[in-house]
Image 1 (cartoon, protein in one colour):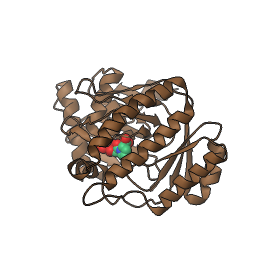
Image 2 (cartoon, rainbow, N blue to C red; image 1 turned 90 degrees about the vertical axis):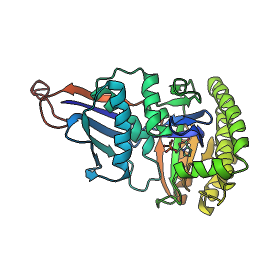
Image 3 (cartoon, rainbow, N blue to C red; image 1 turned 135 degrees about the horizontal axis):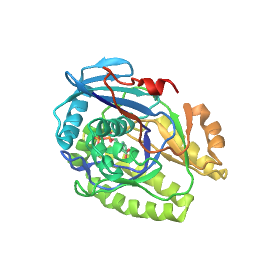
Length: 334
Ligand code: 2P0
């Protein structure tokens, strides 16, 4: 029985991924760029040698669609490893319930890292990121952590890697912790099928990725911020162009965008973005993050984050014992 435990963090895109070129291989229509967070890690243990695949999520046995998705992902790992062994997956998210951050990026990055090790695969960071992509697109970018670019391309070429960038921080403003009106996977499909703005989104975002990488390399924080906020609004405009329309931003979201513009007028580095929901994330500098968080406290629950690490193994061990997290005698003596 082989067990491995990995930890991974969420990431927030500065240039968004919205739409697949190939759903079965999880290939994005465009590249994207993100900042990995240093808050809310997911810790996942995979133990190979179970009677059947099982998933325990935050302490509760799970048998719904989440288990189906995990099993399909493990099938990919088993194919690579030439194994038919089933596995027990135990995953704990530290995102507070309703923080408004998706856990699929950290979840599948941690699962990919732990499962690859538990099944005996020795993958390069690039191949680990390609594997995480098959679980959830945004998980691709949680493998490197830090500021990362996820390349569009074919199966071999679509992976994430770190990019040089100036120091960054984020302030997450949770406006509404309720469920999304429509999940991002289905919303992406509807956007591609019905939004007349989608072709322009693909063209412009491809250019924005290049511009963002140039701004990151130059350490031009203001340009990074401008591109971040612009790309987020373009994504939401494209989504709103779907039929039937999908609108994630609420009046309260827009109020935060206005407040962030006010902070810029006051001389702070603050640029707003938002994913597939009403919550707003503000890109800022390590110097300005405290002032930005204080100024936005009245708009919702506010959480600060610095730039986080990539996905990594906590332990990988062979054990005779039946279950994850078992400490061998020589280790328990420490
Ligand atoms: C992003 N989002 O770049 C964009 C911005 C949401 C808005 O990636 O279908 O859960 O698993 O590939 O990764 C959310 O989509 O979608 C997402 P799948 P995922 O972060």
